[in-house]
Amino acid sequence: MNNDRINVFLILMAVLGVKVTLLLLFINYLLSNKGELLDIFFVIFNTLSIAILGIIIFSVIVSYSILYRENVNKYLMKINFKLVKAMYPLIINICKFLKISKNDVRNTYIHLNNIYIYSNNYNLNPEDIMILTPHCIQKGSCKHKITNRIQNCIRCKGCDVSDLLDIKEKYKVKVFVATGGTLARKIIKENRPKAIIAVACERDLTSGIQDVEKIPVIGILNERPNGPCLDTKVDIEKIENAINFFLGGV
Ligand code: SF4
View 1: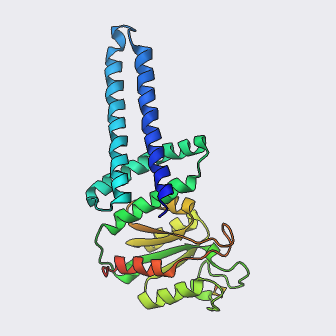
View 2 (view 1 turned 180 degrees about the vertical axis):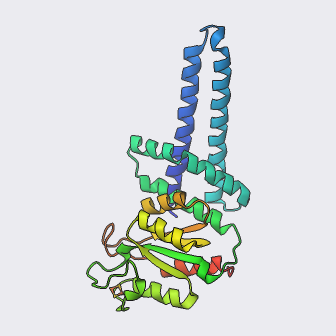
View 3 (view 1 turned 135 degrees about the horizontal axis):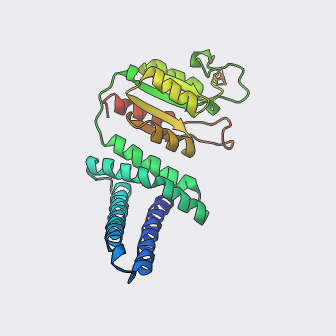
């Protein structure tokens, strides 16, 4: 993963910490010498602010260790990922304010998620593993509708759908193509997988990982040689690695 992107994420978390500190100092300044009535509020506010600041500092340190050293205890990773998830909307807002690409943050979010999932052990049956891809992986000019039934693909090798069918047959895993988040949620609800390998862009992967809390998701970014949402591609080797991991083979 690109180190600059990781740095952006950590810097934004640090900015969040600085903002909390400045707010803390500002409120303290406003409330100083305003009488005893405000004393309790003062104490509660300061305690909460310092706790939040401590959480942010903890998360920056743990995220840094995960991203740069990759030898962090998996329970710490789990706690940290929950904290990052809670702070994510604030970090995205800072992104907007500073006009920084949100994809840099999303990329790191996906990376933190994947590292955490890969720190666990699984031994699943193939039928409990679901590969979920967006429909833009299908060649735009293809006449064979695969959204409801991927087997409609005649495997002309014009796009990666053909390879996904090979994977489906080789490993006996489930493969679905979804046209959006609503259909993806419906597919997950109906099929109840125990693990998901999701292929999508940064935005969709991040929201997908956030939506599916109780099922482990490995996120694989799609490749977009023709721009967003058109004739996208996926690294099949990454998918096979993820399948083997969930099968307990890695
Ligand atoms: S491999 Fe060929 S038939 Fe299958 S979805 Fe792609 S373009 Fe269509």
